[in-house]
Length: 464
Length: 148
Ligand SMILES: [Zn+2]
Image (cartoon, rainbow over all chains, first blue to last red):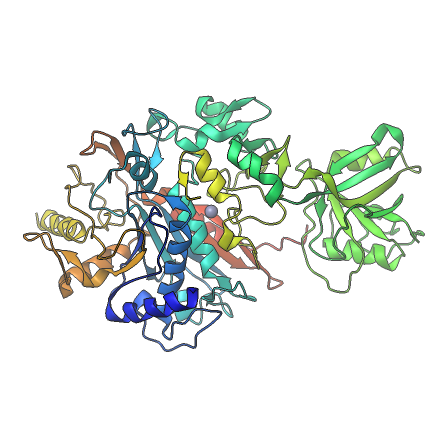
């Protein structure tokens, strides 16, 4: 069915004006307007082979087809009598051999105090204002602007060795999945966006936006719309404690999110409990109920900082779980050294008070599981050695990416302008469409995971 | 004087084509509420998303009907959208819409800029930046996240 409608679509694109598949009668009509001049961007005539279910045979047609699929996915999710206009453009944007701006997007206008608004004195995206009021609030203008970097395909010195991937099948390999990026950016344009100034904490034009009404700080026990500027500045780096306070998201989370990567301390009694941990991006994935259990032994490499495990480990770790300090070398080096010394698992304690050690990297030769923990927990465990036993596992008693059953927002300890606040936290597992980074092989991209529930929380009506 | 004329003509084209002026190259702001012209109405039944080849359609100012855009309109429009990296210096301004609501055009530097860089080990780091300057900083930064 998709193939059928897309080929029809492709034909029409070539004709200049075209349309797509049939959606339920109440589906929002999402119109993508191609702003590119003839011969470039969305009109680029360079012949290409169809890829991953995208039947386009020119670069421009493939780009347009992805936009159209994204429009169809969003249009069949939202209920609105008002057409949602999305401006589309491919154009050269800043790029170097190793870095690029992929694109930019957002609502073109925000509106407030329109008939049908859920809250007075509250900013809504143009698209949502239209949907709630049943009237085009800013007629003659698109609702969502978007622009993507054509040089990623066109300039061999831009992001060397990487291209946009225009398939629909999430099979991008090392390339950049355009469908995921477009779905994500349109989501911002629909209202997954807060407008608070990251430097001052000030509200936009002195009043809250609808998103801030659902940003709850569990430390301050208040939402962002009612905070002072100073409280918002505090809250934007209150990692793990800023959550989405919307019932649709909270209720749906258990069916989307998986068990939490954890270190379950079994002994001594004083430390007994399950602690959130960061699963490593390498080595054996954490198991469920069984997990990996063993006695914790502090690693010693007898060189410099002995507990950093940056050199071959000299104490006996056979069948043990190695406890290692962060710092001095890659996480993969530490865990590989622990494995070589016979450890069945490894724990890396952070060396700074900013959450669990992040445990990134890749090394296919590593086969044991490992996790990162906080500086505090590391110190507590060290104080109890020997005599500590623990299990590395995915703990069914907790949902990944949540605090007190609320889904976390991304508020890292060091503010990341543009990424902080208007995304889910990166501790969500499996990865979500609205995390700040594009996750390779994001399975949930086309199902939109928690995004429809989030839009429902702020007042959008969803199709059944 | 010339500049003023050119601004007016760019705005007119923008309105004619039923698009936002959010990427206008100039730093000036519209001084009146956007004219209440209809966005291009897709010639399709309800519920069907549609792709408008923007450079080929415009709403005719006199007839109100869709018509092909002129080459000049097309060129001007393309030029505007290439300026997305030019931040406006003028502050955004609130205006009253025809239906009595209040609206503000979001400035370019409040858009989400999606960014990526290739790390020393070949892995990709993606993220989002707040505005143009922050985007440039992100892609110029070199880190190796798996190292400490
Ligand atoms: Zn984003």
